[in-house]
Image (cartoon, rainbow, N blue to C red; front, side, top):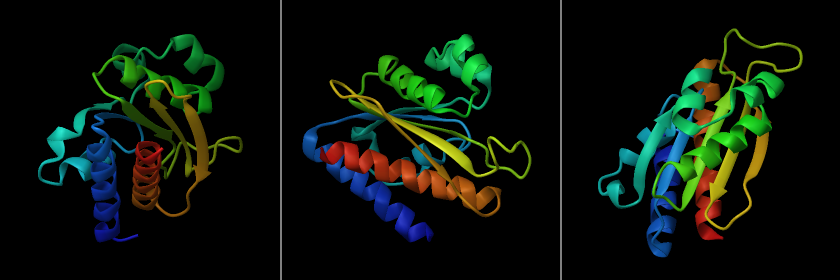
Length: 163
């Protein structure tokens, strides 16, 4: 997974969104803004990227994205339910057509038998679309998990923009 291939994914997202006149937002936890950074690293991205939310703490997920504390308490921050709520929250709090959310355990600590290091949940929401979630368990160190999650989020955005 090279830096160049990540850039190509980001360029594909921007091109797909431009073709449809779509704007997007990101809601990131374990990636800490890496998806927004990959997109905004490309000159002219401001016509597509409206904003990015870095919601690392549970409190930030609640305050900035409206994720109910009871949902986090019931399912944990790293869950399908919270990823979907993050994506919907970004869509509700920004004048955008599409959003992606990432929440996971990048490591090296913080994992458990039920939720191992490398577990990442994604949510993708769009106006007039059903919110989709998916999960992956990525291998490698913290940097590898975060990069893999960033790349998958870009792939999800690209696919959603092409629908």
